[in-house]
Length: 421
Image (tube, rainbow, N blue to C red):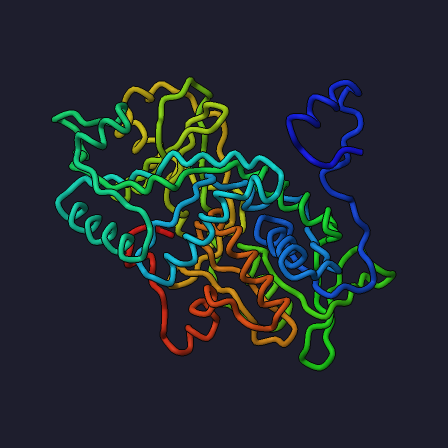
């Protein structure tokens, strides 16, 4: 059976009617015991399992997913990858992730369709220009590319923007991170699943975790609707990578997280020929736009500001995003909406992630990415795998421990950069 993707294998397999390709990953049944169990079969959980096996040789690993691979937030986002953050701790974390994305197709032998088209942030006022100058220069000080633009340069990049004299939100300039862009969300999940499975990791779908096994205060496994007769699967270590359901699983384990779950919605239009050159963001309007590889206009906005576990959004936010789209891109006003969806995001007070040990021995967590989880998949998996394999926090993850909420050493990226996350 063919396992490696290449132009030669594609041509050779055509002679057999493409009937000799191996499945992308094995459909595994849970074993009684593992070295590590990762709960959550989204991008972060799959990346954690992959890097445990690839970087540390820990291959007796199970990924337990309640639904199907990539069916949660990994498949319910707008696929933007960037590292335009202000604080040094955040900049190091997200730029490491961006550098991994730049080589991920080669690493995984799976095309994730990473398009470095650039992320363009618009300025609509003198205040915006001053804030973005500070922001871009902080990025440069952190060793991350950033380029300030005037109004003419913005118009040259995105000619369809409303730059008329009577525009309600005049465009005075902006800045761009040219290395940023977007990737195919399901390809990222499938690539990590394929890579992890090839290294011996068990990927178990339709396997919801309903509780934790404990010896004293230490977690030693999980209870599921699969596994042995009692649904028990034992492990030396258990990791949570379940995004908006992090507080639910933490409650089952007996501790509380400073996490609130909200719905973050997005929508796409009917497909059209290429009309957008970049990922464009307007912090003042609270909306952003890009174009998918299928030609759909991808639109997103702010959170629904009430706690929810529903994978759908409110009409109020949809109306706001559509209004912003028509204002900024008048020529797209007659496009029809094709579909709308929402993911459940895990928001922490300082809009920065939590990567590390929990108060419960034997249980570790990767959560709190808020609206920025997709861009952080490689670094989230890399740093959590390092902790699980070595017992030590990765240097990139050291500022993002739970204890910062006791010490007050918060990394308030939302207040610093003026963006949700």
